[in-house]
Amino acid sequence: MPSAVSPSAAEIETSSFKIQNPGGDWRDELEKKGYTVVRGVLTPERAQYYQQQAFQWLQSFDPDFDPKDPSTWSEEKLPLQTDKNTYEHYSVIHEKFMWEARQEPKLIEAFAKLWGTDELLVSFDSLNVTLPNFKKPRSPWPHVDQAPRKRGLHCIQGILNLSHAGPNDGSLCVMDGSSALVETFFDEQTNPADWELRDNRYFNETEMSWFTERGVTPIRVEAEPGDLILWDSRCIHWGGEPTAASNTIRTVIYAAYAPASLATPEAIAEKQRVFAAHGGTTHWPHTNIKLRDLAARLPDGTPDPRHRAQPLQTAEQTDQVLKLAGVKAY
Image 1: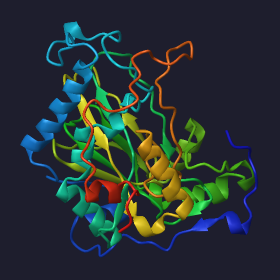
Image 2 (image 1 turned 135 degrees about the vertical axis):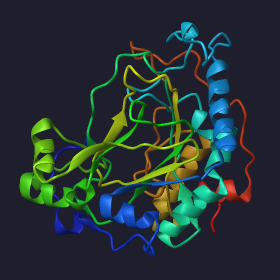
Image 3 (image 1 turned 90 degrees about the horizontal axis):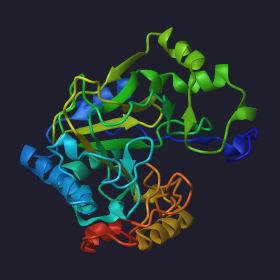
């Protein structure tokens, strides 16, 4: 973990980017609330296709796992997840179906509208499959994915929703309106000497009360298969666990895009290294690129012997894939 330092004026990163051309569509809500849902980015049939691909990937570890039969669900049958219910290892991030999803035209179109360009990089982000009533639900972990030293719009995160997300189902939870207040919170309620130079910051209960006292409320985002959930990285959020009333397997692909022009040559070089290693990074497409541990690790810290150094099905390295990956210039 980086040591706490007091950022100088030169270390404050101010962005002048704004959400492009808001006016009567979902971009208005994103700008105002810090999150939105873009409806129907995929057809229901296409969303079902990706969900089935995800299930087949899980079954590749144990064919006895049946997503329709909870009696077949066990941790022994499944690959290792993070504590956030995401799959980041076994080269899943670069499976063919994951890259197919990242190239969906309306998905790219939504981010092109946001940024005002279709010359985009995509994050090497994870798959989430949350089985209802399977594990003890995790308590909320409210956080932002943008460092306190970064000011203005730097990153818009995305979830490609492949399953129904109703009031009892697993979904993204956000603090409605927090993105407009979080910089004020950092300035007034924290000491710059305590700011860690990383793009992730968690909030405790006392800090969360500062936001609720100002009318900021928690919302579980509801969405349908094929919808795209977007949120500003300054918006406080966490993964909402399904309640006991849910029987829906939450299935989502995380995907964020940003203009290729924002990436430094060093960031592009690192992104290329991660791509060649079939690795994953953070939610950020153009910066904050750090190769995650390639191997999932057992509780004793040793690598899972089921580790896969490459995908089961390799994506075709088309011009679009290589440009989105930062391997080929626009």
